[in-house]
Structures are given as C-alpha cells and as structure tokens.
Length: 266
Image (cartoon, rainbow, N blue to C red; front, side):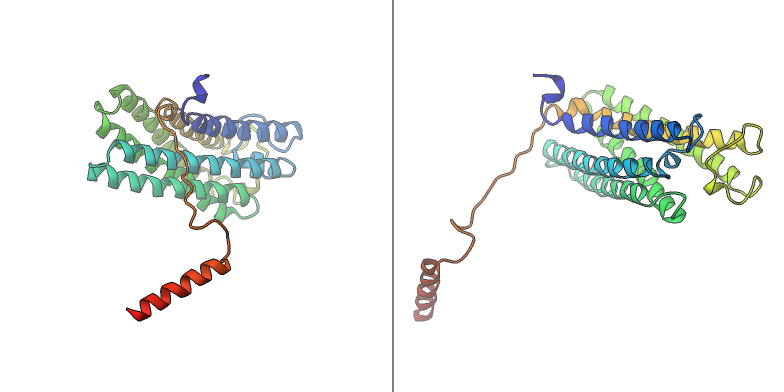
C-alpha cells in the first residue's frame, strides 16, 4: 500500500496537488496567450480572460470542495481524539465553521473575476485568506493543546512556522496593496494586466503579487501537514433502512390502521 493510500491521506494530497495545478495551468495558459506578464502576476489575473478563466473557475471550485472535505475530516478526527475535553471541542467547532467560510470565499473567487466584479472578488479573497488564516491559527492552537498526548511537538512547531509564514505574507501583501492602490500611481490599476518595469508603482506591484503567491503556497503547505494525521483515520457511512420499499404498501396501510384501532380501543 502506497503512503497516500493509507487512511484518508489522499484528501489533503488531492487538495494540494489540484490547487497547485490550478495556479500553474492557468498561469501557463495566460502566459502563452500573452494575457499577463510572465513575472509573478496576480493569481486572479491569470484567471481573468477566457479561456484560462474557464479553467481557473472550474478547477478552483473543485479545490473548494476538496477543502471542505479535508476540513470536515479534520474536525471529526479531533473530536474523536478528544471526546471529553470541552475546550478542544469548542475550538474544533469554531475551526470547522471558519474553514467552511474560507472555502465559500474560494468559490466566490472562482466565479467572480477581479476585472468584472472587483468588490465581490475582494470579499471572496478576504474570506479565503483572512478567515482561512484564522482557521490555521485555530488548528495550530489545537495542535498545541493536543501535544504530546496525541502527536509530537514537531507537528505543532511545523504548523506554527507555516502560520508565521502566512501572517508575514498577509502583512506584506496588505501594506504593498495599500501603497499601490492609494491613488499615487493611477486610478485604474485594477484593470491593469501588463506592467512596464519603468512605471511608477511597479516595485509595489511586484511585492504585492509575490506576497499573494507566497500566501497561497503557505496555505497549501499547511494542508500538507495533515497527511500524516489522515493516514490514521477512515470514515464510513452506515445505511439504515426504514422499510423494504420507498412507498407505503397496502400491508403497511393495514398495519397502520390496525395500530390506530388498537390505540383507539385503549
């Protein structure tokens, strides 16, 4: 059995590989068609113009579904490992809600492009990266609370490192974006897909785009830390039939009528 076949470890693997492929494929398509500049464009800019917009949208929607599945399994695993610890259970529920909100934001990013509905796209980005960062924080706290009984201290330190990476990327992207869109370098930069290195604001643009790529891959790196945990869990659905058919048979009608008569006689 391969390592990714153990338990449910294929879920975080699929999430990371598929999401990375989404970014890479849309980037390559946009570069080949000369829709964006080769040097670190915004991720959203690589999914703005057809045909890469179609590829970006459908693949990112699949990533959102894989993200929700991964976060749900993580929720069930933490709950099963700590059934009597109320503090961990509360944090675990909060983490699940934050994770689902982050995945919903990813759907918004996929379906509302930056150059078409900018403000809705920004809301999706805030949900994905902002709320997603808080989800990473909650999971890191849970990792701290569960060590060393459930897992080693190394897992907590790795997740803490990735969380700090994520936080520094958010800070860098926020500051550079505020500077870039402050109006000092023009008023229609949202629609701008091609930049000249000699233009004013180019340095802030590069810092902002590089920070976004760094932020995206910090998220993917965080989910990579789930692989080892997911090797030790599996879920199954239990089917419980309430009858042998999907409609009421005459026999069931008679049984119901008999029950009513007995109840009435009592």
